[in-house]
Length: 375
Image 1 (tube, helix red, strand yellow):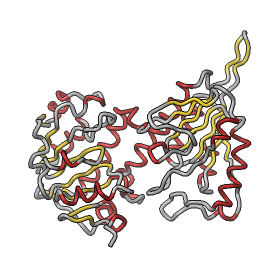
Image 2 (image 1 turned 90 degrees about the vertical axis):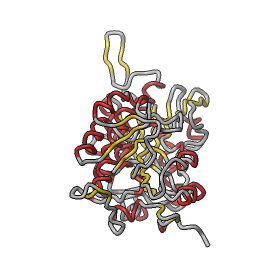
Image 3 (image 1 turned 90 degrees about the horizontal axis):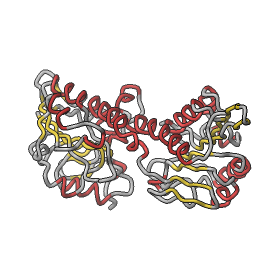
C-alpha cells in the first residue's frame, strides 16, 4: 500500500499534509510513503527531513498511490495524475462547489472531506476544523497586535500609565475561545458574544465578560451538532443594537462567525466601523465566506477613517508549521481507521459513520447526501 503526500499547487497555501513524525508512523504500519519535492518547504520541513523519516521524494509520488493526502481540494490537472479508485483526503470546501465535486467524481477517485468529520468522541483526534480554528484564533490576536499602535497590557511607568487594550470577540467557537485566551494572556480586557447560551460559562472561565441578548430564542440557539443556528431577523436586530453601543468603546474586534454551507453573517456594519476610535483594529476570520465585517477585503488590510480592517484568509496557514503538524495528525488518525494492520492493506468500512460523514465521491459519482446533483 502506498500513500502520497502531494505538494499544494495554490501559492497561497503554505501547509503540508504530513510531517516526518506522521511519515514514521505510516512506515511503522507497513505503508510505503512518497512525497512530491518541496511539499513541506513552506512549513519549514525539508525533503531531507522526509527522506530521513523513510519517505521517497519523487516528482511521480502520486502515481499509483492508493491514498493521496493534501491540504486543499485537488484541481483537474492534479486529478489527472491520480489512479482511478485512489482515496483522496483533503479539506475539500464542498459547499457551493458542485462543479469541482463532479470533476473529482469523473476522475474516478474516492474523495473525503476532512472538515465534514462528525463531532463525536472517537473523531476528536480527527477534527480538522478544531485543530485549524484553534491556531486561526491565536493568529487573529497576533495580527491585531501587529496592526494596533498600542500595547495590550496595562503598563504603569514613571512617565504615565498605558491602559489595557479592550478586545471584543464575536463568535465563540474554537477560534473565538483561543482568541479570548490569547488576548487575555497578552493582558487585554476581553468581552465576547455568541448566539449559543452554552458558551457563556466557557467565556467567563477564561476571564472574559459575556455579552448577549438573553431571550427565549437565545436559549434555543444551538444545533444538536454544537453549531450556531441562524437567528431570526428580530433577534439579529436586538443583538446588533446591543453590540453597536459596545463596539464604540472597543480597541480591537475579532469576528469568527461561520455557519457551514452559508455566507458569513454580517456582524459589524459600516456604521459600527465608523463609530470606532481611529487606531482601532478589526480582524475578520470569516473573510473567505464573505466576511463578518462590512468593507473587509480578502488578503488586505483596509483603513476606514483610521480604523483598520484585517482580511487575511487562511490564518491557520500563517502559523504553517504548527498547523501542518496538527493537520497531519488528524489525517493519520483517520487513515488508521481505514487500514487493516493484519493484511497491511486498505480496508475502508463504507458503513462506518466517519466514512459516511466525509465521503464525497465513489465509483464515478457524488455520493454524499448533502451534495447529490439536483434532478
